[in-house]
Image (tube, rainbow, N blue to C red; front, side, top):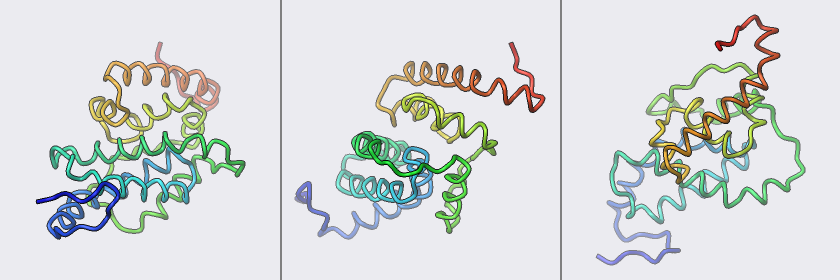
Length: 193
């Protein structure tokens, strides 16, 4: 069988579309939540999801295993975000608070996801502190600590070695610890030495 041209979205093989839909579409809510955390804007997150799924459809033949769909999609989304980051950085719109991002993410996801993400209930202060982290640290913390990815999956998504993910997590967590020390003291939490 001949493959479609790289820019051609049409397919003569209905089984390819059906397979794509069956394997990839169930992860939409996870990709949207990840996109919201990266972009912090619902419209940009939806655009990023659309770009992610378009790229995924075009490259579906390169998917090596059905077990690798989730990290493959998150990596595509992350790479698409990095490519669009400079344009978004120049935007002068007001940015939503982390609580607003979570509220809108929940509203945007009207259908129950097929696999329930193990989302951690995180207080607004913690989310606000995460949002202040440099992008590389924020991505690692968001994927591993707030998401449901393993170190290996995060390394694949971010296209870097596992050691780099662990280093970014360590540095991101240290920055969070510093930024949340005052809040922890006010709230009666004690930090372990």
